Length: 178
Length: 272
Image (cartoon, rainbow over all chains, first blue to last red; front, top):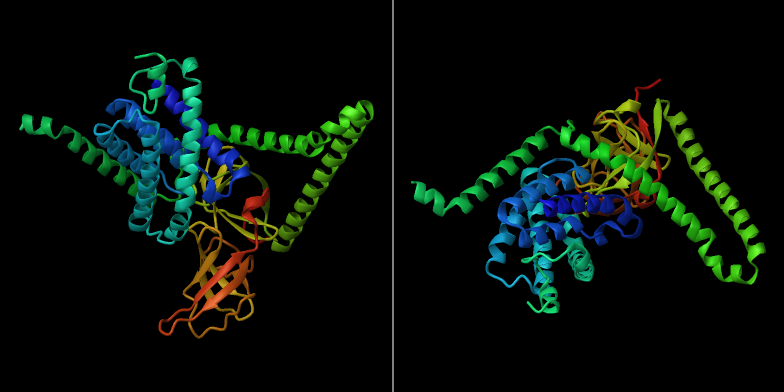
């Protein structure tokens, strides 16, 4: 339960970062989606009910910090959590490079879903002119920030305590010889 | 039947949840003018943090501009440098106040010209996504703001309020893909609808035969019922006419640099 609230707290913190701090340093196309990274990590690390509830709540938080309508990111993150769960059962998610590859896949899927929802449901097709040119920059910056976050997570793992099944933490088990 | 449900429970759960979220999104799309309880709560919770972060960023920027680059010199002559630092800091503050004063004076002059009651507000946050173009301002329902009110700056139209909380509001910028503003080419009075494209605008429904040239000024037509007539929207950037088709392709750049927007005015009333 502590971990669940930590995910939610991190989500709110990331949303504040994305809306107030990152705009001071990065233009819109180069701003990382930290909540997406958190969602992917959540999908890989938590059990299904927790991942779904946290995913839906984080989606609602992101919706409240961006765009005009509540529900877009709720739906997008639900799909991403479900897809991540299906994939995580087939892959060795303890491998950090694979985790970064999943971040790239998640970024593509998120942009695809946002584009689809906004074009089909909101009839806001011009958004594709914004989403498509920004996609390579988004991929690059999300992978870069995910690498930094993963590095920090590995570095400060001792402080947070080790929990088996955490995605990307293969080095931890090596250190402890398990 | 129970066996079937058990076997496909993941798939069923996924489909039910997905349908529920799509319905939620579609419902909220229809309720554009309403701010949900959840959104109001998040905006209310976030506003003090965003104001604090905004203030902190200004302080850090001041310290960076006034102190850090003087560290070496300070080692050479600490006492003198300290005095220098304080003076510089005061000067910087005065300059900052003077710049803000100038910006506010321009805004006030603009509002006087506009001849409508308007409320000044500070920009305290931006959009948390890379595709939507919205900002958060530090005034809300307690200051008398409501959904749909137009937001302007001295250089022209900023956007309109789409979500309100007691002490903050979210403003949809004219560069957002879901924004459409009824406009006129000032020189020829040609009508068109300015749609956002992220960094610039595209003018839709401008008739093929209409005389539009690069550099023409684009102003609000007052037709949409949101913005008063005659406010500056942008400058025509390029005009393209295909061999066929009813309309021409017109691109325009906004007169406002949204990445450096700090103060805005919310137009709260009708003509005086």
